[in-house]
Length: 320
Ligand SMILES: [Zn+2]
Ligand SMILES: [Zn+2]
Image 1 (cartoon, rainbow, N blue to C red):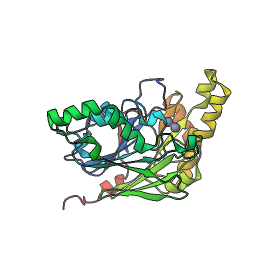
Image 2: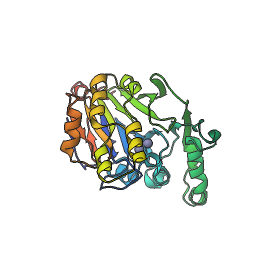
Image 3: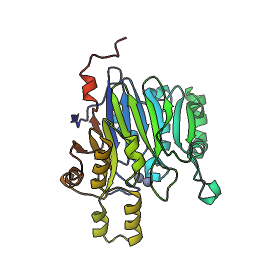
């Protein structure tokens, strides 16, 4: 059902739906070899990115993904482990010399948290604008010196509404329709999960969330559910504070509860990612399998998965 391959994709010939778990670690902490959270949804000759954790720039390159094929960028929420590498990703995927962005792409993410500091803290738009400002010297030089396009004009930032009670279409093009729903990741607001519908199947990305009924609705009958998971015992065993453990319990999901979400939504396959705290793969899998009868995969950085294999068995619609 999936292959763990380091062979880069060739988007010139790629057809169907492939999900690449570019990075699978929660953070901001380095507790092992895995990259920080980032997921690519590859549809035919283009791809979409969800979150920009530490290591995503190199991981995307090694997966064969180049900015010139990027069709959308999505941010689940503004915890730094999800956006820390956005600056590098943009700077290393910009313009023809690096097979980077040449035409505008949407950047879709949360607006400012209206409940904190009177809404004065940066949302997605200010995040992007600040990156452009911080690197204005380099950007200006490369525009003149190398004839690169103006990066700011290639990024069409769209901030989402504060909360969606039900799955809501936030983006649509010829290859995907993307729904978002608000998830429960206190004290972070807004926080979103995204579902990508394609002609080859669907994939749902949980973002960071505790057990969330809204996510069950979003993931209804999805072909592949990428769900976050935390091993609380890892932190308990290391003597983390009660407040820290409480945060983990209230705003993240145990693998058994991730399995519950998969079972209740009727997801056809569960992938555990954004792994917080370390454990053997067999532990993660057994926990999820205690509540979910379908296939469970523990994501690794660079793992390529092919959901919707039933679609692949049908005659290709891409030859037109
Ligand atoms: Zn996170
Ligand atoms: Zn978070």
